[in-house]
Image (cartoon, rainbow, N blue to C red; front, side, top):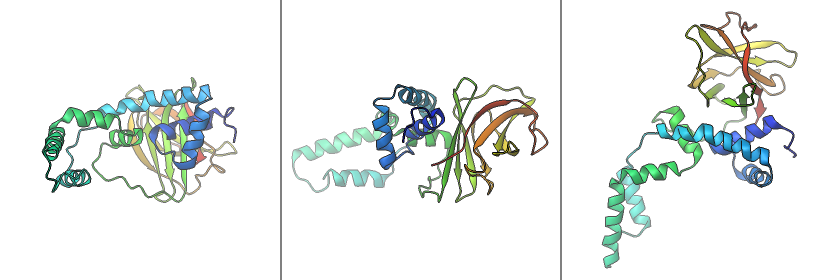
Length: 243
């Protein structure tokens, strides 16, 4: 597949690559393209610049005792009789107390884990069960700057809207998300925040054949008032693609 002349697909793949959701053979193919494609490299750098700083908001966490027991077992720290054992024990005990070490280790972890933690800001365990079908859209402004990433989970019937670039809108305005049909008709999917994350219901009709495009408009406070007709201008948009 040639993605050189498909900027929307490049943005989609670059965002998934940085988030860590592009895996297996798809990730290896992407890395092969990345080595020789300057536009793709630039897209990855933009997504890294937008997403990786969010790791600063991730709270440090002290690993549980069971984690340390497993680490010590793997390193053979139990039952050994030589002098080096106690040195290793002391080393790991010091690391347990060294928050700066763990903060640095966390920053070096995968972008996906860091971004998800910082965006969700929750202690709930992430469900890694893959959905039956997934969709994603990268919404960009008129300068091709990524503004939001929208993912669709057909199993849970929900949309997750993540604003990767905070928007400065007036107190009397709202941002509203729209599904755009092939025939040009539109349907409101709900209001989205100027920053942060929101989850919205995912209608049954939302697939890339029936709804190839998503768009966000700037509306009066509370939305347009008509679920079939926006009143404000489109501020960012993107293609709705199956993953």
